[in-house]
Image (cartoon, rainbow, N blue to C red; front, side):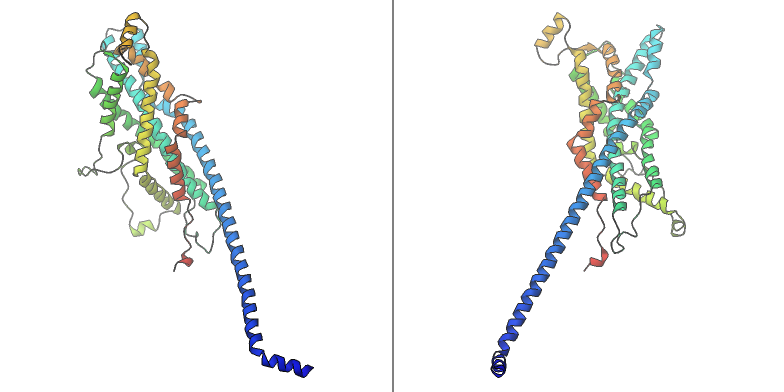
Length: 380
């Protein structure tokens, strides 16, 4: 019996070997497939968790940005009112001075400057803080990601000191930048309105054309590169958010002595300037400005409602036909700063913060700076 079994195995030895190889290979292939499937599932789970974690961090960062904008509005409003003090002129008019016409003409310029500067500054504040907080937010997110294979060891860390120092740059917009902006707006307003008599009657469309003329002069200003006449590609309003002048790059010896925090700050400011020079930034800022000036006209529309029979007849001939003397429009335009830079709830600021283009722009900035650098060990 044993002899017959041995003979059977001897005769079918090749078949058993082939069968064993096939079955063993199938088992190994099955195990390998299970291992790869589990590896894929783990990787997908890890990516989903990372995406959810990053989305949560982004949402929290946007809420912080919104609260920061709202908290800085009073300071922005005070800065404009200090530089364009119409209250002083109004108090002078209340005393019936001899130079009453001169004071009214001064109030005319200051009133338009206040409103136009408030629209510019609020739009710039919203977009500039979106850039700053999403750049630093991306760095903060990367700081929470565990290092893998030493990939992130050379990555700049957004320490609390760096965060505070970087975010303090917004003060330029509220101080020196605001002063330069007010000067530019005042020059444009004087070019358009200085010779306009106080008795001249204007309608909403006339005011819209005046504001458009002023905007063209303010926003059409081109920057020369160190007076060389070479036109820069950045938005003309960027000069009021960050200083245009940049320090010379340090030499090799001095660069070695610069603190790591200073190097990180230089990198952050360079990246900020790159974002401010992007076409997306230009588009979003211009959209916010259009919305802002449109809201000013909407707010003023209530004061152009017909009150007399002649006004009713004028209104019947076409929309926006009611006209008021410039002297009556000045107090209305002067008070617009209280709406544009008013305390919360501020519908205008809320509208800017919730605009789709602003949200998309913020998401793009955060996405660009929260990407984990590729692992160099995986390079082919």
